[in-house]
Amino acid sequence: QVQLVESGGGLVKPGGSLSLSCAGSGFIFSDYYMIWIRQAPGKGLEWVSSITSSGWTKFYKESVKGRFTISRDNAKQSLYLQMNSLRAEDTAVYYCARLNMAYYYGMDVWGQGTTVTVS
Amino acid sequence: QSALTQPRSVSGSPGQSVTISCTETSSDVGGYNYVSWYQQHPGKAPKLMIYDVSKWPSGVPDRFSGSKFGNTASLTISGLQAEDEADYYCCSYSDSHVVFGGGTKLTVL
Image 1 (cartoon, rainbow over the protein chains, first blue to last red):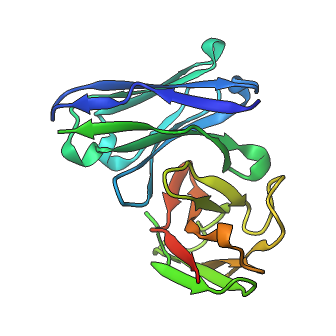
Image 2: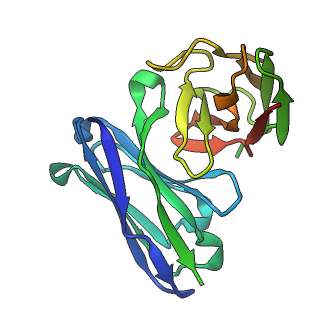
């Protein structure tokens, strides 16, 4: 079935780095824009970064520019988020999701989330 | 950069209807397009409920409906059921950036 599975979360000290992965299956990964969204404990959803289907164009939330890098490997059906210079405020559950043009950029498939704790 | 404002909480009894509003506050009028709504149960990933203001993805019951007038989008849930109790987020996609509302907690009394 269509699914996304994140991995790579964990506990890291402020200033440290972490790399998240998101593996897609059951669909043609290269057909879709992909997105990272996070949710701090007890807070709402927050867009972090998105990437076009080819991987050529990337977009970032202002507060993570220069620290986070989104990338993808369509041959491996995988999305990545390299997070450097981590701060306490980056602590959150990180979700990857598929942006579906047929749904006018609605995010119709989500992973289960991976928890990042910066402390 | 736009911001989307939602009420923090709404409530209703089983069988009733509730409406959750989502108002764009920005000087960039006209960029409030591609509105979608997400339902999130505690500890779960969000689920797409409405896209393009008022359309349903497959599998979403038509008890959920969306609309938009001016800078305010709304999600209406008719015939409330216990399983509708969740957090609901509006979302706007514009110029390759995504903005979420702060979320509304729906309580089914």
